[in-house]
Length: 184
Image (cartoon, rainbow, N blue to C red; front, side):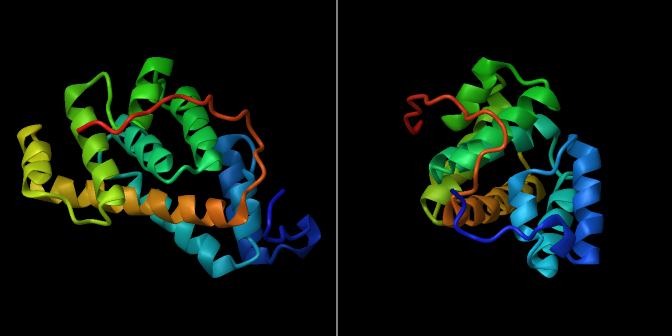
């Protein structure tokens, strides 16, 4: 059961309701995370603006792989379920690629390097090694793209923390439990 209060529909502030309507139109429903955040309209605006802005950096499948890797590293069951749903329904990712994403990998070697690097950024609190930085560069990522990987990882870290604190009720099927060892 969620630990933070979700405002009743009639109690959602007008500015927040507009954002919820936009999210609902994009996704086909309003996820519980957004309903909860609606109790604080500036936070809702920050989260959705960040998501919209970062939706323009990196390709969608790379962002999905990063979302899965970061959510697995943070053991966020709500985010794993949501990102599995989004990667499948909107991203066209296979079940195998989703499982690999959770392990910080991918069927695509370049995307695997981004997911692995994002996962290491989270696990090491940004204290990645020279070898880890060289590895993502060797996969073809430029310094501006590495900044994008870090920023996308932090975006998902933010929503992981919100959902872990809240223990947000699942409103979509739970992600399957998989053994996802950290790749070295």
